[in-house]
Length: 181
Image (cartoon, rainbow, N blue to C red; front, side, top):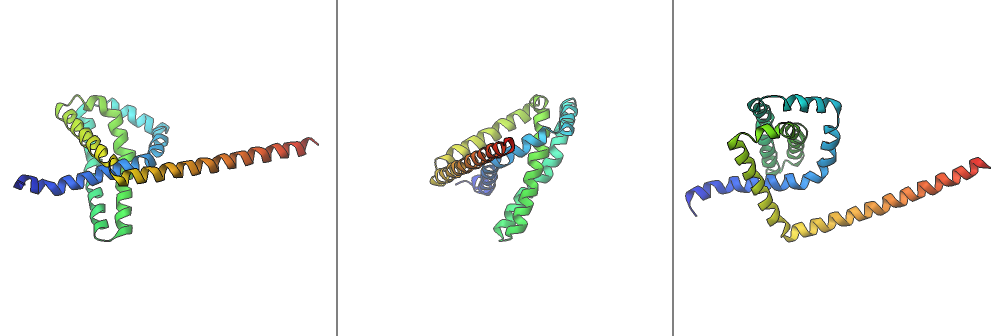
């Protein structure tokens, strides 16, 4: 192993951990992003961002990114030191900033940002790394077990929802019969 690879290995491991955490959290925060994006104030903000010049959008994207991404690393470091609550709290705040602010700025400005050559190249590289890591992760026994557990939990929730819905429907039908008598 060359010195360069040895030096880059911790960075690669850290990036892999961040990408994996991001992908595992995505189903949880997806509905939150959709609700947030539907707010009138957010829609107005996105239109305003989209109207800006591409390098202004880049700066708007870089500022919260420069705060949130190091916070994610710091949160992981705290977790590694055994400071569970503090590490999880910092990770949660950093991911919330990413999900709600950075992703909305990126979504609004993406067409203009992708006209910046190096930025488009970098985003392509990030996408390739994410897909490569996910492809690897999906082949591991841990992923298979987690996916099976998630699917089982989803089925259990669906059964309970159906039972509750059916019970509410039958109880409202009974009350309607009592009212008509």
